[in-house]
Image (tube, rainbow, N blue to C red; front, side, top):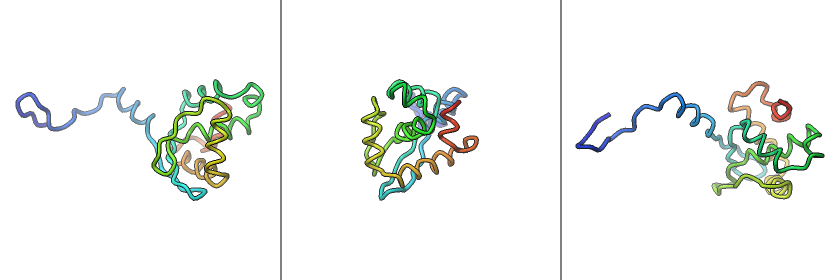
Length: 126
């Protein structure tokens, strides 16, 4: 790292906490349903936000919860940011926009993170 006066020309190395935060914020890009989809890494916070936004009935059905969770992993579609859904209707709108092929592509994106089993539904149960 070079210092000119009091100005650094390079960023200092990341500390352990910053590395963990950066890893959690990591995204990958996948293609499906005619769209380029930016997929965020699934985290406990993602699952918690999904549970807060969907009905108790939807939470009790692992397959349905997993399908909703896929919408919560979408960070962007075709280069445009997508906010975190706040309810089932917003999650369904994302699902409708990208279609079944897009949802399948998200599962492939999750596998790129190297998560155990790569199954969103299995991860959702934990």
